[in-house]
Structures are given as structure tokens and as C-alpha cells.
Amino acid sequence: MAWRDVKKRIKRQVSDFLEIPSDVMLDLHKTVLVGDMQVFIENHRGIVEYTSETVRVIVGDGEMAVIGENLTLRNITSDEIIVEGKIKELKINN
Amino acid sequence: MFLFRLMSFLFGHVSLIVQGKTLEKFINMASSRGIYLWDITKVGKDKMLVRVRISGIKPLRHIARSTGSRFKINSREGMPFLIERMKKRKVMVVGAVVFLAVLYMLSSFIWFIDISGNNKLTREEVLRAARQAGLAPGVLKWNVNKTAVEQNIKDKLPIVSWAGVYIKGTKARIEIVEKKMPEKKAAENQPAHIVAKKAGLIKDVLVLSGQAAVKEGDTVSAGQVLISGEIIPGEKPESELQTGEEAPSPITMPRYVHAKGIVRARVWYEGYGEARLVEEGKRLSGRQVERVCMKIAGKEIILKGPKEVPFKEYERREKVKTLPVWRNIKVPVELYNVQFLELEDYREERSLKEARKQAEKKAVSAIKEKMPADAKIMEQRVERINTGQDENLVRVKVFIESLENIGEEKTFTP
Image 1 (tube, rainbow over the protein chains, first blue to last red):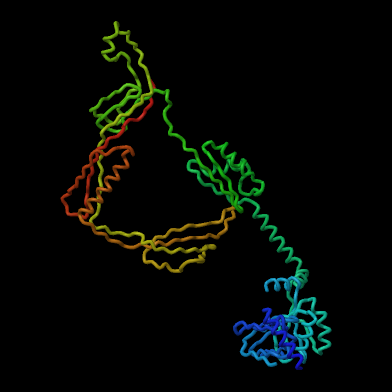
Image 2 (image 1 turned 90 degrees about the vertical axis):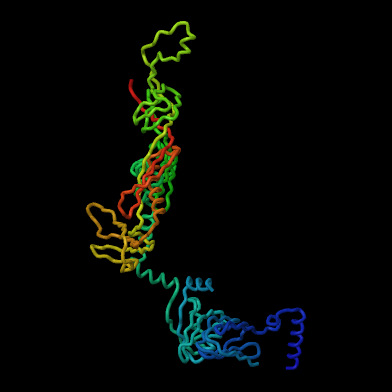
């Protein structure tokens, strides 16, 4: 576990130094929230739960939850999800 | 996004209702296998609506089997399904094609011909010339040789100096420019007098050809010969006679010429004008409404415009468009375009001076109509007519003295 943390730290330092976007270098997810209507989640690892009130997505090491009303999955490909509806909360837990 | 929609329309897509306990797994598996899913909506517990392209349905069967879910097709959209449906309704497709073909065919004929620029020529004359060159209502658009039509109009109608033919849609527009013909004058070689157009007092006479019949200070009446085209010999100036040794034997035959010259005379005009001190009447207020209605067999249907005319008093102007009568068949449909122009009462009061001025203006303009354009006004006098009665009218008489050319050519046969 400690080794992984060290690797992660070095990667971050390199990406900071070279000014490479960290989502590319570190293989992180990227979330774009458009008002309260749309959420783009890039670089996901699949969905865990989908109901019209919650959408939970695996991202990186953790999980991300979109909570709202009338949620629909507008678009789903192997690395991008677009969630539409009335969005109330976004939760990230690693 | 638009491109994506177009593509999915062209290739066809279906919306599926998927039922199962592990719908998330179903979605994950589909997306990881590259099956594109969109518009995923939960419709109930363990039930969702999914859109997918036709090509994705087969692989989805495997996924459904392995995740323990079932799906059935809810609706089919896109070109492939549309074509499938069309195959069942061949006649409708044929009808659509026939409709397009007829539309195209009808729009390739010329139906209307507009002519502009003809003042002296009649519409029929131009149309006849155009018809000879192959431009008439009902001919095919591409059979019309525009330059030939233009040339034919110019050849057949010598008064036309330029002709242009434009075809726009089913309408052909013929634009022509007429030549300005010089005023017709009596033939130069024909003998002519110069006679007075109107009565006047001769101011000066300038003879270019012919023999002066009047001199300065003479009073002439209309029709009197001013410069004679008949030259009677023997009236040579005396000085000439004196220098010659012997007077030439007088030629008894008079010579006839086409008289030319300018005879300027003072001419008097009298004009009358009147103006009211208080004027009342009705005039257009400028406000108007328009109504378009259709008359079908005596029944009127208002297509546009108000039902009730919003004016108390109004003038009505209407234009009626009817379908052309063909072989005793008259279509009882007429299109009315009615304009309602509001009338308003007005009352105008003038002072005596203003009324007099207006009356004078009217009188002068009445005189000016009778005067030639090149006349020079020498004197102008205004006189008020007093009727002795106290009335609403101001009557005025205007006298104008002008200097103008009163000569007019008049041919004669000796």
C-alpha cells in the first residue's frame, strides 16, 4: 500500500512539473457539471446503481454518486457517462 | 449531436424495455463491449427504457442471457423501418412520386406573361409579337429563345427601341422601351402659312421664310394668316427698283413656300376663381382597414381583417379576383380585397385675405393651363367681384397679359 502511495506522489510531482493535466497523467476521472441539468463523467469504470433518483459510478479507486430527480443516462460509452435530470447532490467517496 | 442523430436515423434504432434484477450490470457489459446505449430511463422497478442501434440488438441478447434479464422491443425508428413500412404502401409512394413529377412538370411551363414599359403599344400587340417568336402562355420554359423573342419584338414593332425578356418561375416578364417619336410636322416641301393660334396684339415678327402679312402693333384674331406662304412677286423694295435700269417684267405666277418664323404677340387671359370663407365637408382621415374575403356561391368568408368596420363613415374600395372562365364553366369562387377608408368631417375657416389669395391661386392656375409653357407673363391684375350680397364666397377675377409665340403652321393647297 505504501509503495502505491509513493508511486502516486511521484506521478503527481512529475505532472505538476511538466504541467501535464493531471487527469491524463494520473488516470483520474473528470466531472463536468452543467447547471443542475447535466453531469459528464469521463473515465469511469462502470455503474453500480441506477435508479431515477441516484446514479452511482465507479471512478478510479472510489465511487461517485449523483443524486437528483428523473435522472436518465443520456449517453453511455466505455469511458463517458452523461447523466441528465434535476441534479441535487454530487458525492465523492474514496 | 446532430450528426449522431442523423446517423442513428439512417441506420435505424429501436427502443427496448429491459427487465431484470441487475440492470447496472447489463449497462456495464453493453458499454464495455462497445454497444452504444443512450437515453436510458428508468420506467419502474427493475425496468428501464434503452435506445440502441439495430446492429447492437444481437449482441445484447447474449448480455441479457448472462445477466438474467429480458428485453422486448418497444418501438422502431429510422430509415430501415420506414422503408419497410413504405413497401407495404406502394400506392402512396407512387402518389408522392407522381405529385412531385406533376409539380415539376407544371412549373416548367410558362403560365403568365407580364408586359411593362408599353405606353403607346397595346398589350395584345406585344403579346402577338412574342407569340410569333414562341413565347406564349403554355409553352415549355426551355423552348423559349429569349434573344429571338427580343429580336422579333424589335423587328415587328418598330416603335420598340429595346426589349428584354426575363423568365422567372412560371412567369415571363417582357420589358420594352418605346422610341420617342418626333412630333409630326407638315412636310417641309408642302406650302404652309403661319396662322395665329389665338387673338393678340403683335409685338414682333421674325420671318425666316415666307412673306409677313402683319406688322408690329397689329391686332390679330385667331386663325388669321401671320406669315404667308404665298409670295406674290412684284412687291420689291423701291430701292432695288431704283438701282436697276429697267423694272423686270412682273411674274404673274406667285411662289409658294413653307412659311417659317416667329410671331410674338401680347395675349390677354381672364380667369375666374372662388374660395369659401368657411369650408365644410368630408375628407379621408388616412386611417384604413383592409379585409380579404372569399365569396363562395354567395357566401362570404372573411379570411383576414375585422368583421366590423371600426369607422363611423367610410369609403369602400374593392378589388375582385375571379378565376378565369373556361368553356362556360364558371367557378363560383371570388376573392375580394376590400379597403375601408375612414372619412372625417372637417371645417376650415379662413380670413378674407386668405380666401382671396386662394381664389387668386385657383384663377391663375386655371389660366396657366391655357398658356403655353414658354409664355412670359408681362402683367397680372386681380379684381374682386362684389356681388353685393353677404355670402360665404370670395370671387376673384384675374387678368394676365403675356408675351408668347402665337404662330402655328397650317398647310394649304394653292
